[in-house]
Length: 548
Image (cartoon, rainbow, N blue to C red; front, side):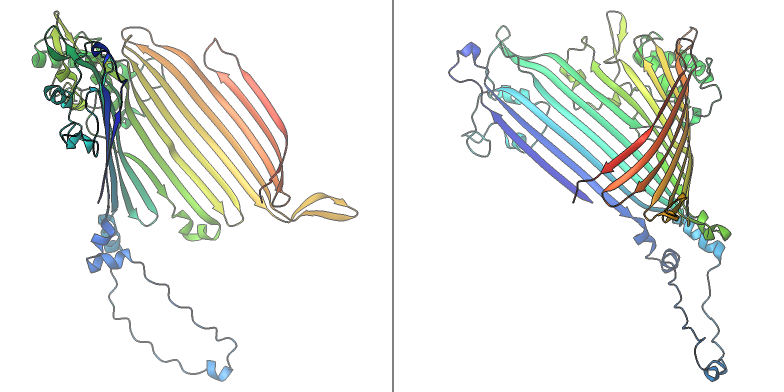
């Protein structure tokens, strides 16, 4: 486990010899970076048990016996001594397999990073030593070493560290960025590897004007503003394979419409008031529940999900070790990967919330609509934070992929990828759904001493260096559908794209290479306002490297 802490402090002088009403003081700023990282190697823990250690440690290969074919015949005809019986009991294969399965989780590593900063304008003291003033009082050792107390402005005002200017417009501000990355490595079998990832990224900024009010003869906060973005790994696979996803009428979208009334009714007993069904605090939980396949009656009402969900990457590379395949293939890899994330692109507090404590930076954004809620203002329930758009992005990259390499230097791969981008626009209560399907085939072959089908001066021409042939064929199907509540859904964009790209490269020497290429692209639109396009490119490339 490693923990790193770093802090910074900066004092910036303001204009000198100013009139009292124009004396805006100095600006002080601090930063604090914290990083916590660690790795848990579970294999070392398993190996403390001898039985598990024997399974985790493969046996050493037996030494090869010396060749006796050239020995004198009389030596070869010596009577063989009977070998001692193997008295070591071997663990049955089934027991080994079950034990290996129990030890599937091999390691866990994670990092937590937190970056913070505070800017306080109007500071009327000057640094003397180590950033402190001559009295070793201001701005305090905590601030010097990176403390992020949100009440530092009140403390500075009560201690007389701030200028009493009613014209000060430089904002007091604080920022906070939090990043969480956790990865678990799982190996149920030697050649089967699974990576499971959990991710979260939160960015927040708070600003306000904090200055002296000569009417009330005190310092006051005005125009408090909190804004930021939010991203977390999620799990939307429950609705991935719904057969109506790429159709005009979607079952998942109908579920979203049905969820609206349920979410709206869940707020009433909590807040004592009701939201409109098209309000963001109703739309977003209904959207998350519908497209992640969760129970709308129990899902969190917060637009900021608290717990990251798993994404994964799976590879299996053991097929080339089976039977006759090991005589043909050097490697065979089957791959599968899933990535899904939920993002709040931007949020900012409503101007109707002008109490700094309501939007303070030390108030976790995940607690919104869980531990604190919007209030009824002028007869209407108003959300604390205004969100313009939320997005769920999902990719199978690939859903299934197979790549092989033969012992004859032939490579081939096939990949099938799918993806969804689901954007909920709050202003018009509309979901824009982009679906992608992609299948690609790659073939490669490298050969040296290649004979050309013609001769020069009666001799067959032989290319001594490597000749590499590559072929890529890709089909991509993409479709964009706009879905509106109680309105007709429409396909706004879409096409089927075909690409064929063969090329052949000859490496003349270390510096010079020649390549002939051909590219054919055909784009078939799925909407009437677009036209079919086809392009063809071909040519020869000559590359000469000037590097030594």
